[in-house]
Length: 312
Ligand code: ADP
Image (spheres, helix red, strand yellow):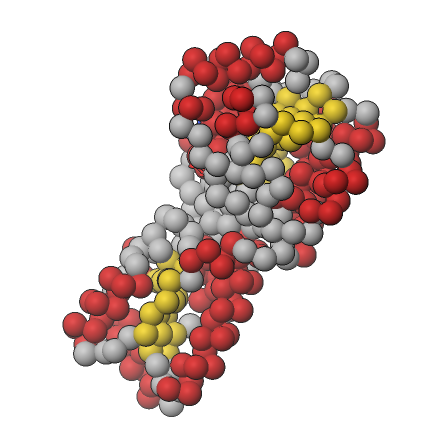
């Protein structure tokens, strides 16, 4: 195999650059050309790529975001566009592709695999919402960013005895809320719809107050409700004056954590090896029992995502 492509797609996640760098180094060692397609699937359609070389990617390996850029591509949803594109890639001698992204990007990788184009999907999303993997690239950095923010909120809250609700990302998955709420000793964690029990949360707040804790913290997953909605309901029902904050994009920013740098490196090296050794028709990578493992992308996308509980 002489040419391999990489792209990053969907939401950016810290650790994507570490994966790109690992693939670039592996390519250099094996004498394989590595093409970095710009702006997700759009670059693949438009043949907009740059050749990746270790001296360039090394400078990005420790940075968040993605050096290739990312986008959402409507055009890629068209089967005829994908077929033409695969035909062109084959003509140019590109023999495999690595896609780093979330579940939407996985569907794109699945479509390419179904066309017989070997594609390896790396789970790159802060949400930890890809089925069958215990961890996704970016999740550990995101939860560390959330904890930094909560620590700052806590000092102000303690001074003023606030009841504070912090809305965190995760789309429909509650992993960020569960992990950060646990780490912050939150008084209530709303990670799933079942946790959205206002009476139970009110009791927890009252119990915490009775222990003379200076402030009360509620961590809320965006997929369950917004901080605005939650505040409105709690204030109306129990007469609180909740403070609220939706953390937003700071959660995905900053440099990747140690875990995400290592994960990016290992995922990248394994993806390259799989394609270079022509090991199969394509796969999804993930973490199973703490090890980088290959999974069947059809099985991954056919499975329901379950919340990954911290060390339980
Ligand atoms: P994420 O990968 O973060 O979940 P999106 O859901 O926006 O982000 O998906 C990223 C891109 O993947 C989309 O813009 C589209 O180009 C491609 N994609 C999503 N769903 C499909 C699908 N069913 N078939 C083919 N491509 C898809």
